[in-house]
Length: 69
Image 1 (cartoon, rainbow, N blue to C red):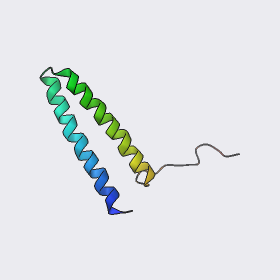
Image 2: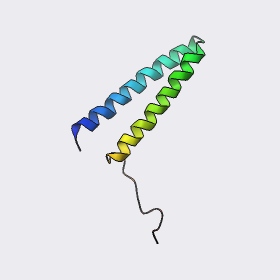
Image 3: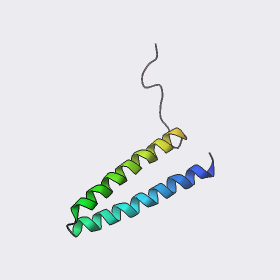
Image 4: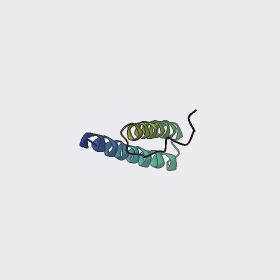
């Protein structure tokens, strides 16, 4: 597994955490519209992160769950 993938995953995780903290702070200050937009961005980054991890084998999965005919 190349080290570049690990760096990408860690950088996306750090960005997600920073945006989540900013979103929570905005929510406590009752500034809801930017907080909702940041939550959507965090969700999209999470989906991107899962895609990167699945495609590079960082998340093991069982391909035999559906029997092949």
